[in-house]
Amino acid sequence: MKYTEPMLKENALQGKTIVVTGGGTGLGKSMTRYFLELGANVVITSRKFGILESTAQELADETGGKVLPVACDVRHYEEVMHMKQLAYEAFGQVDAVVNNAAGNFISPTERLSHRAFDTIIDIVLRGTYNCTLAFGKDWIEQKQKGSFLNISVSYAWTGSGYTVPSACAKAGALALTRSLAAEWGKYGIRSNAIAPGPFPTEGAWSRLFPEEAMSEELIQKFKPENAIPLGRVGEHQELANLAAYLVSDYSSYINGEVITIDGGEWLLGAGEFNKLRDVPEEAWDAIEENIRNSNKKNKAQNNS
Ligand code: HXC
Ligand code: NAP
Image (cartoon, rainbow, N blue to C red):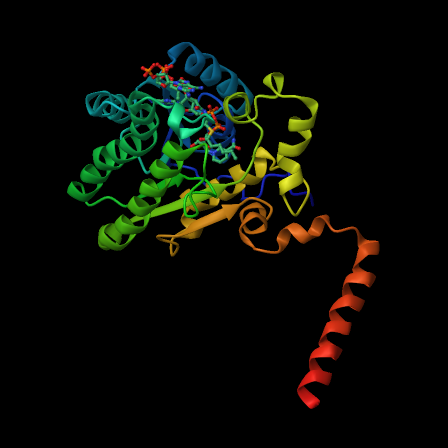
């Protein structure tokens, strides 16, 4: 068995309809492909209809599943309500919403206009609560169970310089996830999140690791793999496996959880002394001897 293999049983999502915002590209597309393979109907939404249409065609051909592309800017509530209407018309009901749409780019915060800040917050936080309200209210009214899966990021709880609007928005979406898990659990509505570390996608790499604009030295310094204890970036199927599990009935008792999938990256950055992994193996003998000698000196002083 390999970690790049699909994980869930055949037909694990049969009969479910899942909305994936930002489903035309990157991780949203990979999750959509796997949901379709597992028997779900999927509604994919984003701003660019052309991309959604070609993704829908490609994935329908590949999996034989039903996928509906709908143009919808999640920043605008009326567009979300229209998307919901089209989803109901096509599939009758919606069982899960994956809030995956996002905007992000690296920048020193003092270089950002307030409009740039608004843009990221609006896509990530407003977009997430717009979709949450639109579908959550219906589920409550119709006494229907449902599940939200919010795609967060591993810096949502630590914050991160140079992606400050994203950090603020993802932290807000995480608070929404946990708050509604407590409040809406009584309606049978689950809210969970995934906090990914680096998974190569064109959307993220072009805005967060723009190699073409970096010197070889900077590229090596900021290579994502170098900051990950497991020494590699994530594979899309690994994330799709986790996402499929969290929207499936196998995870019926998981509510309010955020699962980090980052090869240990954020903890490596967080631990004060983790940088010592750069100390060459051969230097440790001398370091140990030095520490033992000062221990001895300390003891001798205490005993005299
Ligand atoms: C400073 C910038 C800028 C930059 C845009 N702006 N890029 N400011 N530095 N590099 C400013 C613009 O000047 C404008 O402000 C405001 O931001 C909005 O920009 P627009 O281009 O008008 O917005 P829009 O066309 O809506 O595009 C939104 C976007 C774009 C976020 C800027 O990048 C986008 O469409 N992104 C969607 C996909 C995405 O970001 N994927 C990555 C997700 S990865 P003014 O003041 O001029 O009006 C992720 C986590 C990765 O989230 C974690 C990895 C480990
Ligand atoms: P991506 O391909 O750029 O996906 C972002 C999607 O959001 C795009 O399809 C985009 O489509 C859509 N989108 C942007 N603004 C929108 C809006 N206003 N309304 C509706 N849709 C909008 O990047 P990705 O890497 O797959 O990211 C997917 C998710 O994973 C994001 O939530 C991201 O924060 C998270 N994540 C990614 C990584 C990583 O390493 N890749 C790490 C941690 C977290 P349009 O442009 O057509 O609107």
